[in-house]
Length: 172
Image (tube, rainbow, N blue to C red; front, side, top):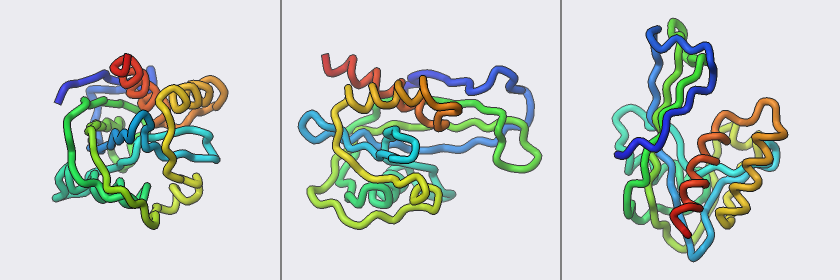
């Protein structure tokens, strides 16, 4: 899959140190001119539905699971690859690691017409995650405002802004 960009969340990263790697998948789902995004009223930002790939799980299986959990929608197919973003941070989540590296794979997806019950993780519930159909410009402007006004902004907002900017350019 094409590398869209690499994000370095911190300037003091030790890229030669022991690195914990995580893969995640994100769904880009359009219906007419609206995107299915996950909105947090706590953070006041939008994120693409998706999440971490569990051991033994394919990207397709993870996308299906994550989209269902976060939006209540059933993914019917992956229609294409959009690209991947690699992020580095000095906030390793596992003991003994100095650096955290996450690769997020973005896929163009289709969903069925009906949206059902959400099955959110505790932190997602705490953030009030809710699926919303929103146009690219609204999501982009909202997330840019969060980056400017929030200290710190959610760790995913910068990444999502970059993808939203690319989607906006493609729609021209």
